[in-house]
Length: 309
Image (cartoon, rainbow, N blue to C red):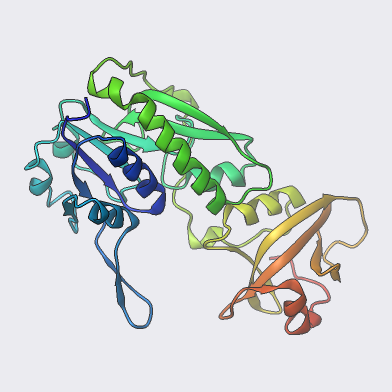
């Protein structure tokens, strides 16, 4: 099975972990497809995707179409018998999906049919889920709607943030594909249709979703902060400035101080409707992240109460 021609499609670190595992396990990755290089920072330094870095490390050809829907002939020229995708970042055209003998397979970071879309990990944390996982499915034209052949579940630590869960699930994804890839390549694995009645969506996070709603319960606000940590960060408006909140904890507690902000034990305490949100790290727009004590000695001393927005 390991000599069958496989093309791997992906872009971020999450996907790179899985690619390297397939390579080191001896699978025949004949080419890698990834997003185009980016210019980063003031000096506009060229930055490769993490998947490209792994491909170059192992001298595997790299294909980087600007728009894959218009430019996929080079991919098909490798005559792939299976295509494996994981967080590639573009919609793969039908001509590519239908080409390989052993299907175009996608590694998706949710327990399908829950959380179809580009931000399943964010939403699992935001909604306070206790469990997530990896689904291995056939790619079809409709987003994340293909038949599923393998699922690997993973618990969600109630204090974990999205960037940490991304890392954990990259290893779950690695283990999942290694457990089922031989069965996929031999056509012996069973694919099952998703239950359309249970479908939910996790679309890519919009800028409008980054603002916290401090009228919600303290648990909801806490989960919102975790879901957007460390990037892009969830913010509130304090003294007419955007302030991102990180490293949060909470306490369910009845009180009469809704709207009050205190500096307690080197943390900012936000008194919400049903409890207290404690924040250890903050970031004013245009500034770097800072510990609560440093924030207090600068901008923070002006905070007496916050306006609900």
